[in-house]
Amino acid sequence: SAQENKMVINADQGTQTISKHIYGQFSEHLGHCIYGGIWVGENSSIPNTRGIRNDVVEALKRINIPNLRWPGGCFADEYHWMDGIGPRENRPKMVNTHWGSVVEDNSFGTHEFLDLCEQLNCEPYICGNVGSGTVEEMSKWVEYITFDGESPMAKLRQQNGREKPWKVKFWGVGNENWGCGGNMKADYYADLYLRFSTYCRNYGENKLFKIAGGPNVDDYNWTETLMQKAGNRMNGVSLHYYVVPNDWKDKGSATQFDENEYYRTIGKAYFMQELVEKHSAVMDKYDPQKKIALMPDEWGAWYNVEPGTNPGFLFQQNTMRDAIIAGVTLNIFNQHCDRVKMSNIAQMVNVLQAMILTDNEKMVLTPTYWVFDLYKVHQEATMLPMILSSNKCENNGKVMDAVNSSASIDADGKMHITLVNIDLSNEQIVSCDIKGHRVSKVSGQILTSPQVNDHNTFDKPNTVKPSDFKGVKMDKQNLSVKLPPKSVVMLELE
Ligand code: AHR
Image (cartoon, rainbow, N blue to C red):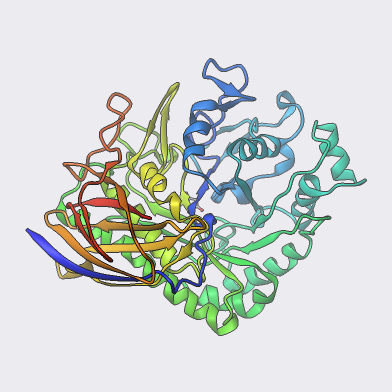
């Protein structure tokens, strides 16, 4: 049945910019994210540019990736960057203890990563090693990459074929230091953050945006301790939260789930709103002007691995349910763009909630990829305040908004509204009043599918794909939008 929802958008009252960096990505040395998914080597029969897959780069360029986080994750606090420079045949091999105990041959290192970022035209976001590294090692990495002048590290870089330094802005000081990054207490990490970050220097024009390793989910004490002890010396603090349908032992299948499991999963995606608001409230005590960014730099759905695949490789399929999770989460980030200035979905290729899956030379784009494609219009646009009174979806006593949305206006005066209908069985009709902006034309795109567990495979890559949206009618300043069950819609208003 059809349900009515009301929405008002105040198109002349926007004050905050939606940072493009909310649409960031994450690539770890994990499973086939880097090796196979991105890096195939120069001698591969898969078409590549200096060892990096052309098909993957081309697909990613379409969604305007603003930044890419690397080399981990947990891998970051075990990574010694000097192992990954110089002639590839001389680079030492190591064990990737976190992720399947496979051999890491270091063929993808600093130069290769920064080449990838140049090919993608995105900003690098490098995460340094606090857990098992030294202050000297991290400090030298910054010098190696960014120093233009005479110094031991600049000389080494030049010997390795890169004359001029790169520019790197986003610099993470450790990852999950409450867990795989050293099992530290908040107090101890805050001290280490101060010490390590002191020696991450700004060379010449290069200004680092320093990011402290933030809390796990709802550990508000971690945020409080960091802000209190080190808030004046950081630009951002990360936040990690994964949507796990069941529990960490048996997370649930990526493709086989019933209605209850679906709604439980979406309820957990909605929890991001509470996390962002409560961590922001803690930050407000120390930084009322919101100068320090909250950066959920690992988020997304985490399921059991696909049957028959290496449990350490975190390879999972991606369905229409994942598209809903991405749509809801990105709307939450847009709505909170005064504090949330960056986010990184985990992960870009072949790992967790990926944009792209590959199998040797084959490649497929996931429903999540298409959500990033629909939502890219929000990047650097002005967020528009909205009032949305949504119908509720109820499942097992849990009540959730059926409709979730965000809106923005870009530099050319085009307005965009993204809407998600999480309801599996009801169409949601949204009556939307646009105030403060004359609308003459509306068009849109929709991502939906007959079954919520529909997904794209190498044999059937186009099962879930956006199409033109016909369900919107305009009457002066009012839009009537018919959202089919389980759909993500993007409207463009001129
Ligand atoms: O994204 C996979 C892993 O999840 C990351 O390496 C780690 O930071 C987190 O626990």
